[in-house]
Length: 577
Image 1 (tube, one colour):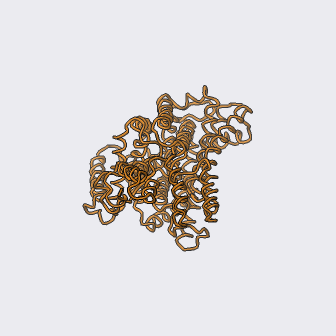
Image 2 (cartoon, rainbow, N blue to C red):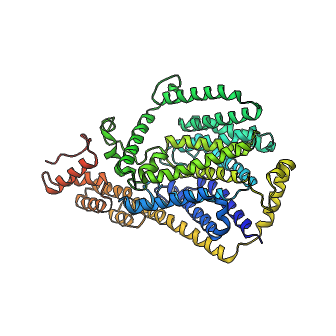
Image 3 (cartoon, helix red, strand yellow):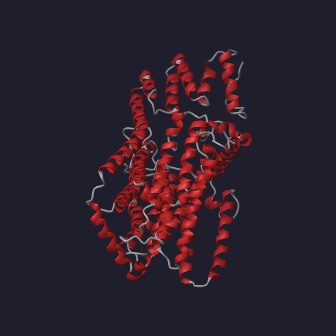
């Protein structure tokens, strides 16, 4: 039995599973955070399983990863750990992330493990299946969106808007924009089966209206970027000479300038693109850049942007609207990574993106023909990078972005693949797509019933267990808090927030509940314990200042701390005297 082929096949099955599972999974009845925590459980359990399988046959599989990806991967994981140890942010917050985001060590490690798993597969037919799964798995999401639009949602979400299981209209909009790009590529592919093209057309025709209905421009920007890339790839296949590049480039540059002007409420596209939220996002990005400058080596800590936002945002942002307008994300994935982990971490991440771009160029050099599968992956990946410039790394969207990055790197490896168990690329081109599919299906039928050796199976089980346990800890802590909060018993709520995996936000909710119940003394104790574990928690310091007697040492200390945390806030900081 060829262990390498069987191992790669099992990894490919897991990659095809994790994207749809992450999109669908939610826990609205059991959890206070019904979106991010269940999705973190999905990617961490499968992500750690994937990397454990990869590591089980490292001597065989390292040749599939390549030196550049290997070096970038080790650098990224190393700097994640160094940030965890030396940034000074609370460890639990860095491990599991802040409430509602959960983009800490567990999430970023898992995403990187899935990227590596996707990159090492190097089977052209697998990447075709990946695109199909990405497109077809959106059907339940689209159907659920229409249920929400019709007002027939069986789940009593706190917000009555169309967001499916993504928790926010912007995330749903970006996801459907990415799906629409892949659909368009499959529609344009001549060799794609007719049924797949028809289904893709129906999904495309459904997704765009849903995106419009959300009122979010993210999906439109993502789809427009991807569609423009696809148009260029089609022109490249139709026109042998490169004269078309000049008008194409001029049009692209003109559109880019128009979009950039619109982001500042200028130009002809401003009425269609500009929203007040864009101005706020500039503020969040500016703060992220300031944090990167302030702590360039280890950052402010994984998912700890919110702890430093007030200090880093500056006077103009503080005075723009309410001083209590805050954020726990730069709304730009690149700035989130650089502010959270410093310059070394963002450089390690960018090195992987550069590798993906270089791999794409290598693939395109092979042929001018329009490849609907690679074009779908590349254009959708570009769309994700556009989303990354204006939004956060939401897990259900991000998992596809990181998988597609791995796919670009892996597909370039198929150019040079000549394994004896596979058709070479020349054979594929000569014998056609049907031969490729027949060979791939035949190979999979043989592998489907095979079992991995016991030692590899055991290692995979251990990896899965580690990933699952790491995410179950905060998931169950959140469940305990929701159950306690329904009783409104302060003692039970306090007990729930003392569990490992609970967040500062859970403590803040208990503190708020205690004050509403006129339990001032108990509220003070909660505030002090919150400050002890999260010394940059602005809300806890503010409550401590408010409940302490005027002129007391405790009040003076609390107000001084508030001023240091939010130096330009002249509205909501209590007076010392």
